[in-house]
Image (cartoon, rainbow, N blue to C red; front, side, top):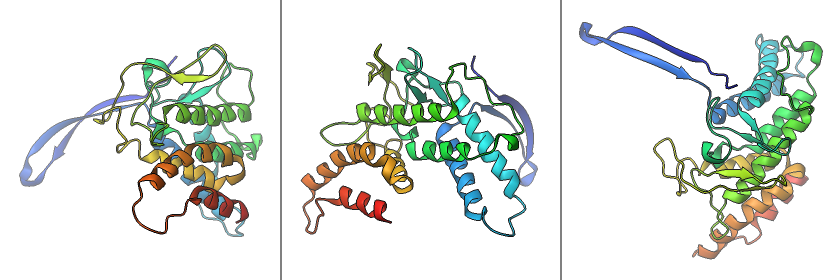
Amino acid sequence: MCFQFSLAKEFDLILIRNKYMRIKIIIIGAAPDGDQDAIVGMIMAVQAVENDADKPIWYNEVRKWADASASSFLFHNTKRSITGNMNRIVKLGTCWGGWESEGNNPSYHSPGSYRLMKSYQMNFSDADRDYSMPNFDDGLSLESRWDQVIRTSYAFLDHAQCTDTGLVPNWAMVSETSSGDIELYPGSFSGSGTPQYEFGSEASRTVWRVLFDVALHPNDAFLNAANFLIPLHNKLAETYTGSGWNSNAVSTLIKFLLEN
């Protein structure tokens, strides 16, 4: 069953020169791309001051918000695979997006955010949770579900990526095979006024989301991130006409992160 929060309310706004305008505000569902960024921000804020002797007044409340929000994200903004427990994909909203014709967007997938949420929740005391964990009805641990999301995100990016250029499109569709593998799903899908087969305003976010994973978790992200970044790096090297190009930029970057 799809959880949906919907609010429709009319307001009378007093504008300049005493002009009136009636508007209707409609709020439906969530935006996983924004949700995950907000949760990461809360976690980073909490971790930045958790060892301080005098903590900010908001510390304990935000500490709990971050954990509860991560649980809500996992429950409402990801979708279990059609064949069972092999994969769990990030959706486009609480009530749309996911597998096959439901559509998806490469730039929504942020493996580094999910690793951060996973580690935060693994270190969060059950005694501090003032809510009941949602019923996922899959028999898996919380850690295993996050691992599914991370694994599925990289598999999705791998299949959405163009092997010639290393780029991904604004929108893509995938399905799961009976063996649990991810494959592209035929058809058309788009949203936000951006065409599907374009490295545009949606798709361009994907690169920094992968780099975010490398920056925070260089050891865990190494293989998947390198597989995604190297084709893009090679295409840039192929078409670069200036001087001083570092042909080993990706490996140098990851080596630096691993050592620092």
